[in-house]
Amino acid sequence: MKITLTKNPKQKPDFSNLGFGKYFTDHMLLMEYKDGAWGEIEIRPFEPFAMSPASNILHYAQGIFEGAKAYKNDKGEITVFRIDDNFTRMNNSAKRLCMPTFDSAKVKEALFELLKIEKDWIPTAKGTALYIRPTMIADQPVLGVHASHVYKFFIILSPVGSYYAHGLQPTKILVEEHYVRAAIGGTGEAKCMGNYACSLLGGEEANKKGYDQCLWLDAAEHKYVEEVGSMNMFFVIDGVVVTPALVGSILPGITRRSVIEVLKAHNMPVEERRISMDEIEKAYDEGRLNESFGSGTAAVISPVGTLCYHGRDMIINNGKMGKITQFLYDEITGIQNRTKEDTFGWVTKVN
Ligand SMILES: *Cc1c(COP(=O)(O)O)cnc(C)c1O
Image (cartoon, rainbow, N blue to C red; front, side, top):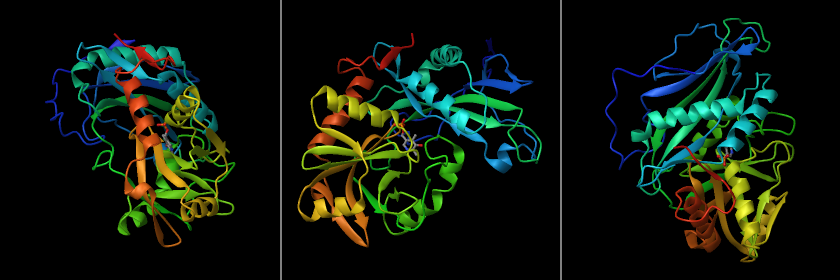
């Protein structure tokens, strides 16, 4: 590994007002793939790439990414949450996008080195973290449509606060009945860039109507719940937590899996299955839809206060965060910031 430190460290932002993904640390990790192999991992100053306007990532979106978080406590101890799962998923995404896989152990070791270098960039206040963004892009200047022979793998870091402007406030979600995000057999279960590009219009239209996000339905029948932009979805119906099964079009979220594992460890009922909007609407009408929330690394657990379907706003739990949602938020963030015991082995010490 080659390490080059910056001569011009940046001024740190105000850690009490970080927002999400707006500031980047002084260094980044970079590794390049050519002639059939990954080169040496480098830690070097965060700076722009020079790339050809013909680079294939700019034309055909052969690119994947991940999202994870590092935390620091008052003693200066740095930890990461389920990072191996991120690298495993990234290698799965790489296979789906015809990109080369990489040695997770080596990359993890280099990431830990980078985190130690950037330790002063890790915020410690409740709800804050250092967001880790591993990314891989094709970077060969050819316009023919085929898998690239040249790639860049990089990791950038961003100190973050709350993902949503209003923090843990329940969100308003519009069920999208026209556009779709992913079909079975497509790339929905890979964390690839194109999935986001095609989801923007639905999101923008939801925003214009006063909603925070849109909820995607299945591509074939527009009946079954899939997920929202960057979160997996959960509903509590008659006290049972239900979430859409991973059928191939849904991103297998690490927070989703953590939610399921926490519920099982506490003997709380949880089901992974198909859930139709008709079922949700019926449960709502009969007063059996107790709670709803989304899960994802960025927001961790985000309560849903309003769900709009067929032009009708369903107000869930009086628009407030429910008990099970609060319990899961407390358990998972407690393990992440080490105020609760990690009986699952999800937390890894970096220093
Ligand atoms: C990243 C992502 C999620 C959440 O996954 P986590 O591993 O929990 O962060 C959910 N849906 C989509 C589409 C995503 O890209």
